[in-house]
Image (tube, rainbow, N blue to C red):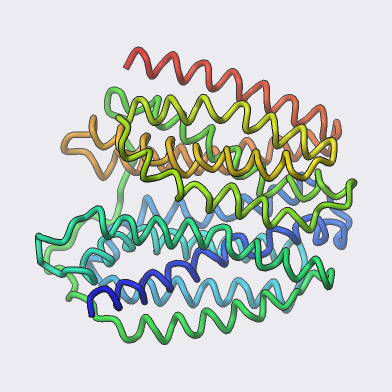
Length: 380
């Protein structure tokens, strides 16, 4: 029964995260429809971070006060609303507002998913390994981040539209997930009220790991927000959803390997992979070689959601001591800064200079960042 409940919660987590990149293959079409450029697209994309960061940093104690299930239900309702908005009013402005709601949804989910999965699997039974609950959460969320985009791409292939049937299918899936979550049990709110505020901190040795995830998730953001416009001149923009699936979801295949390495070695390996992976993605996108793009996204995913993600977070936790909550917040703050600011800057450069020069400048910045981060890692 515990495993069945865990599968139900995993389904709900997959549905929540599927909404995040559901519209990714539509970014270029929505921008063209509104007469806007890549810079505006990246700003709409980054509204996600405006929603997630205040929740992650300022509402950390909310689950102790209201319970875990209400937050998962709220996240599903927000994901439903965000998808409905882009279906009813397909525009870049609507996308930005939807991305903001999805950020809040993902912030609520991130705050409670691991602990809720642990409770569903074993409650107070200490024999239930934390690793099992973590595996459920990471696998279901990593799959979801790419699944929505891939399904949208499938429909766009056959019927190009800014309101493809994948959006309607998502609404049905969200209702099913809501019904499934309503069947789950939840523990009573804690009588001890923890602080709602979780300010980030960087213990000695944690900063290099934060810089590594910043670089990794900057590449993820670039693939999701900018790649559709780079592929469009070659008639390949419909494939961007599969590229999103590659960079978001394939990393889960490498997580077992990452767990066998020390945090230092896992992060170093991930940083080493980033540069050639980016080279494949950028070259394939500008030249119109789809195979290079897809291979590059899978390679990048091994670093972004495998070696750097797990290795970096483990490294931060190892040096955090008693400030693990604040150190974790610092790690994810760096991750989401990378997910937004470099992507917006690259989008503005594309509007000013074109794709090839802008992607080259991003690559040079990535190279400098990797060299600096590796140097700091070796000194830590």
